[in-house]
Length: 354
Image (cartoon, rainbow, N blue to C red):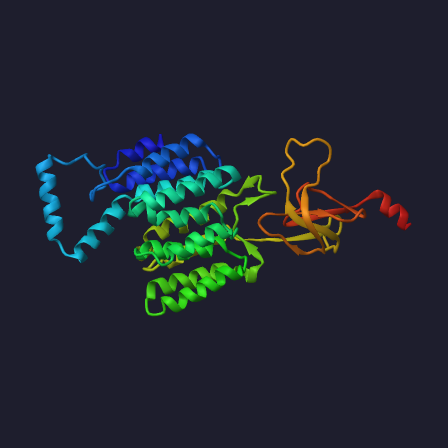
């Protein structure tokens, strides 16, 4: 019903709003039909007024006249028309981000989406290309994968300034709170490259702030509880900033830089802390931290982590890390060791002490 009401609005924002509402409704669901629908939307080539090519044009002669006029126009005016066309096709940018939003909570869907983004970069219009780095970041928040970093580092020197700034900000998002040395080095070199250009330099500083958020002790990843659940307030906070990045010059680089504060909804500590369930005092116990292993459908009690190291709590957990208790003295009151975990002494251990 909401979508039908919005469709009645005779303004280009209505198309954008419809796509945003539909994609938010399916956020994290991995719905293949919705992704297919959004890909169709991205594949459309639009004219300067935001209509499909072939629609709204009178006849072939009129079109030929338009082409002749375009040839006579100067480079500056051509660029201005290009930017206006990109703003009129903002719903396509929302569709690209929507693909990442729908597939972000499922590993196979996310990999397939990353491949799709490569095609969109190659064949998409300006509005689509601008949204691709942001979509890549959306599907990999606080998870700096080498393949994505490589693609984004190339896009930071794109001919279109909007795409380059979106890629710089995306580097900050995928490395948010990780202190990733590779991204830090890239951002330092970008700061010297854009030293005389105020707008990209400001975006580089924002990305550096995100990278070193909380001195590397926080994460912005919306997935939690062993990546089985998704925090929707966190997704909403990230989305608000990502949509602002579609038109940086009018939002974060103008008078609306305070919208960066919406990212606070997504920030949470990424350390594992253990407390005594009775006294609520911190308890130092041994835990094994390693790479999470998929154990769905396996018989018996298969190992849930591989390549583990033993640490004493509190301990930092990476994006794909999982922890398990390495002591028989305590038992956890939750199946997932993440964030603040309450521990209870086992009955046998208290009897042995007495």
